[in-house]
Amino acid sequence: MSADKSLSHLDSSGRPTMVDVTEKGVTEREAHARASVVLPDAVLDALVNSAGELVSKKGSVFTVASIAGVMAAKRTHELIPFCHPLGLTGCNVDLQLNGRVVEISAHCRVVHKTGVEMEALTAATVAALTVYDMCKACSHDIQIRETHLVSKTGGKQDFHRE
Image (cartoon, rainbow, N blue to C red; front, side, top):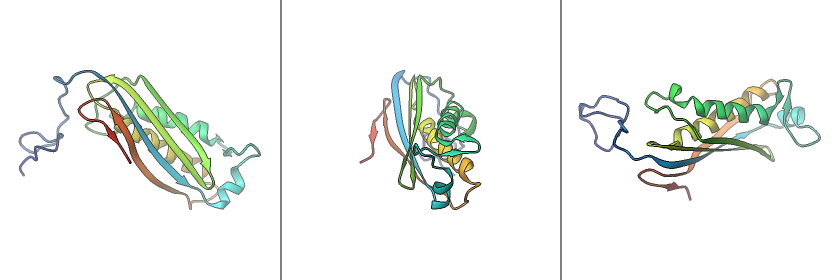
């Protein structure tokens, strides 16, 4: 197998490897990711309180999911083999109920030699999984959808989804 030079996680022999960031410059980097969770009526009927918040027997769904997302972002390098460990300078995970859809937004920031898009994606994904976990007693017909990177800044090139 010959190494494709456009794939940064392959060495000259085509073996998977962690990217060496020794020569990269330290810059401020930020990433924003989103995910959505579609809830069936059975979950909404059982768990939405008078204030419009999702509360299960395990507690406030959005509070627990937000904490889980931040915790996951901080441990991304333990989950994704070639991610560098990063000391995040900021991470927040916001959740909002819009009709039947829980909209999750994760923002991560760092001053480092490598970006935080994997941390933002991990935060959004784990927050979505936590929503599922906390609501599954009411129904397993919960759909996790549309996890994607919205934007990233810093480093070689910026990215902004249309």
